[in-house]
Length: 114
Image (cartoon, rainbow, N blue to C red; front, side, top):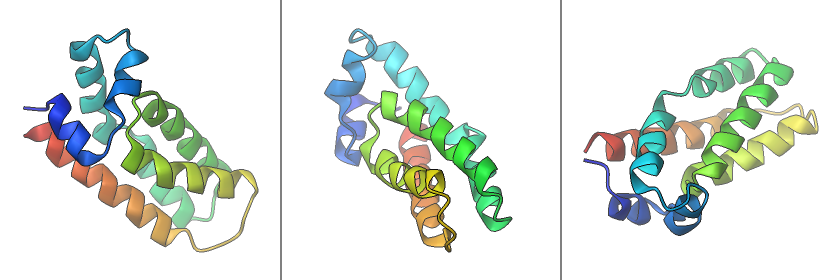
């Protein structure tokens, strides 16, 4: 079962995240559980493979907002990086950043399923 403690151990800034939801722990945890299944992850991954940087930016920007509001720092940090690179229309190999994002998503998915 997902707990605040698991999220703290993951590196999430739980206090800030909870404050955005008026310290409603049940709501916060319910929203965190939804993150691994967000379709933005698959869209971001495919769009970077296809070098469709506009679609990749839209996906990254959407993820940034959702994950930032929940203060899921280990996942938020690489998403901020890729969002800003895509905003600047940087033509580069995004595979390392996408891999880091997907790894953090996977870790969060495991935490959410415990």
